[in-house]
Image (cartoon, rainbow, N blue to C red):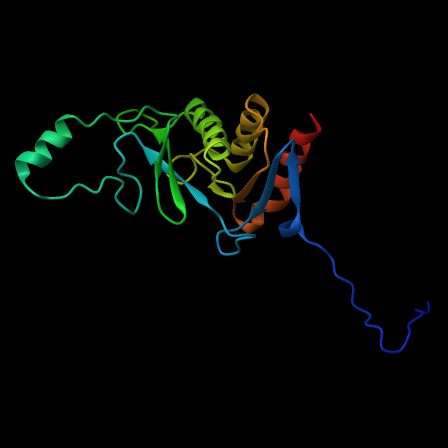
Length: 191
């Protein structure tokens, strides 16, 4: 076998891998990539959280310690967010606390809470123009929701509340899961 090759022309050809793939669900564009390789800059990042707001590595409630009495009064009036809700903390990027756990329940998470949080995230990101969004697999960091099931729930949310404008999501998943999760997403987009 001979290869026709012009002098000065490289023999190399670029092969696009899974990290370059974008799956479209209507106006929703989803790109999968690991935490260490962001495909683009984001405006907001979703964070897996619980009703008491204690699961994140950074405190959600920054209460000034002016007096113990004032702190006690503020805690007396604190209302826990309901599972499925999303709280916004401004910053760069914005932090979207997705409440998918209730630590007083066993197990602490429920699929329906993740589903509701995804629906609320999609509406919020579009309404507040918080796209692009970095989205980890909610219910997986502190629960045992599989990435495959999470992708199905994301598809359900996108079908139930399809964005009317362009929304871009970086779905944060381990490198070894990207290929089969892309297949799951593509199956969803074909439905």
